[in-house]
Length: 84
Image 1 (cartoon, rainbow, N blue to C red):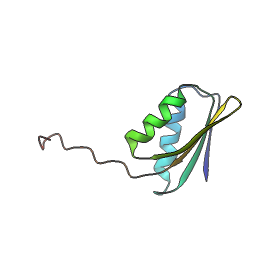
Image 2 (image 1 turned 90 degrees about the vertical axis):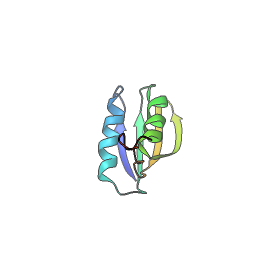
Image 3 (image 1 turned 60 degrees about the vertical axis):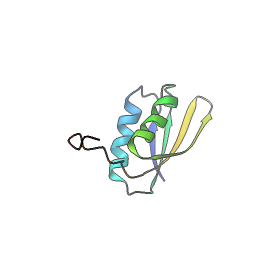
Image 4 (image 1 turned 120 degrees about the horizontal axis):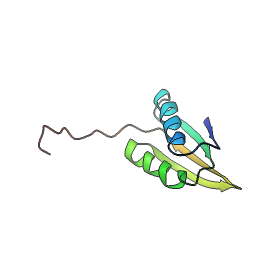
């Protein structure tokens, strides 16, 4: 499992760093993100939902929030010229 230590980073850095790592990973690979910024509790699930990744689990150990993310396929965006 790939790991990202985002402790002591503030929003939006944990997401930006996670995005960069996920871009290099294969679909289905796992990423563990460790964060201390409380904004991550909302930011990381929202990032996963909009970017096609699956949030497998989120838990707290002391003041550290641990997220496990499975890399997914980025959802197709609608073509603005298609009228739909």
